[in-house]
Length: 391
Image (cartoon, rainbow, N blue to C red; front, top):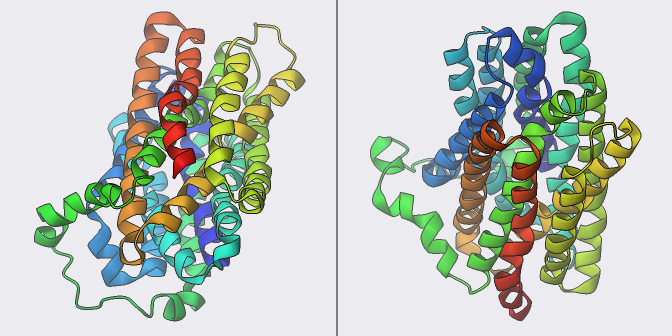
């Protein structure tokens, strides 16, 4: 579990590096504030590309080596962004997403083989706690370094961090990659073969619970992805906070997500009804996010932080429970495919939601887009939750 938690934390920290310095970065290279939505969307598109066709790489290299190469690529992408040139920044966002791509299927493959069934949801939630933990690191370190040394220094720090994170887990590679298929083809023909591209989608039909899980997870992803991409810029642009204050609130939101993933993972295991926990989260998350969106200008920073923490606790802690349920119901030999299928839909939503959010902000301001995204988990939950509870 230590390997998966380390890699999840590192990948998440790199993935959230650009959003936490977005106000100063976009201003420096003459991009609009909402352009961070397009950058976040490109990152999610990169992850979706890996999930769609990267399964042969995972089988050939093994989960640990694939994770190592992923964080190294993410680090190099962050380094590319330091050039301060808009086309390089967009290319870096796409590569950053590809680098994150191995994290869900490789982590699920390791944990499905090693986690005791009675603690499966908690262990998956601990691994997924690395996502907000990494974002906490980004939120605390990124703005402080950017204000003192410039946002380019944050990118160079990310480059070094990505390379170092991959090296740290090397001692466990031989053991955890022992089952890799060294002869598996990984050329373009293998990666783009119709059977390979279809595998994540066909896996969603292997159990009645998989598609409802994917759809509800996608709704959560729209809300979570929009909040994480825009909350720092929103707090600076609308509420007039400093970058450091906004970064601290961002870190608070993420930190509450760490605690929530551990607590709710434990609750899901103890209750024996993980899907019921997801159902409650869908409606509570929508309500809390709507309250956050409606906070008027002049709301004290401490109250904004409290609302952000509440949103992070409920609306950004679903991932581990969802992936544990996928691993529980998917056939043993198709866990990676099923995980990729669910996660592919999730990252399509991570891709589409920030793009749509940015377009709505340009036309309608901040409040309406936030309310639209807040409504999605509850709206999707109404038809999907009865099927989840029967499963």
